[in-house]
Image 1: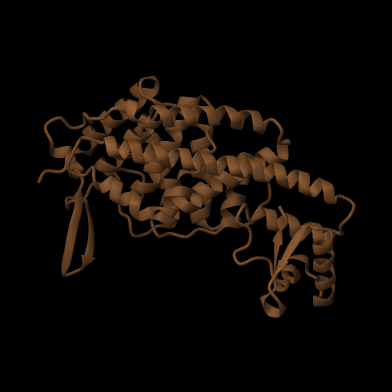
Image 2: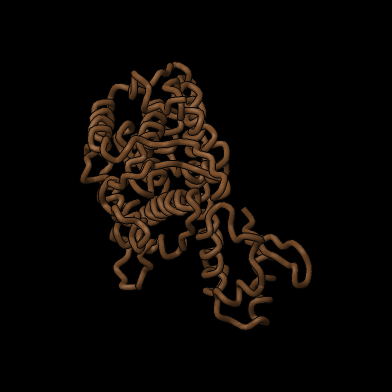
Length: 362
């Protein structure tokens, strides 16, 4: 059986954009709602939203590929590139690179896609990576680029990408399509095609999935004519098997209708998650304003730290040990502070004794 890129009409994908008309309308309506709601956020909150969503995208996109980044370090890297902070705290190379990549995608969303841009993204993504021979360049090795699984003695080839010698031509065609389609396709259709098209070429030795998802962010931002705060990878991480299965269904065909329907739903779900984050920040602002002057600095520091964990909060809830570590206080003082926060309805308490945990009361 031939791979999709070996078929006579490659890369002329077969699809019907009308299949996602309803999702496209829903997507555009929610964009308008998000813009309206964002006006209620103060500048510091807007900055926090940008950092939080870009950080979420960077962390989850890496996690899909089995790589785990430090949230606080990545947040610091993103803030530094935006000029939100100017400290000289040392940040690990991986988080440095991903932070700069997230910033570049956001900052240069409207610039045409080029080979140079993709090379720069790859260099940032591969910081501190020593296993890769072609960093900042398309792969050059003669061996087939295969996606395999199974035991070493019984591997199954799920997909084989075009050979390295054909990559320049393949990527010339891809970049031309990407830039020419800017105003032609529906937003969700173009995003879905961009991702499956790029992944089918698989031009880099490593990092193709992460760069492919970055291209989706670029598509959405270009189509909306403003940087898009939608963390696609946050949804994909939760549905990883389904994501790979849907991509694999395109391996031997140019008919991508099922893929477009699937990926359009992913984008809309990611958008809903971003709207929840906006609502969360508005709630946080109201929450902290109501407590202003009613709590001490230790309590305020801990609450701010809890909000920094995002909508899901601390994994397993806040413990007394967490409170002591964050506020740098004694156990007796921590107990009094926590009891007071529960009394003021700032926190909810669950469990007993060493299983006691505290949650934001929002």
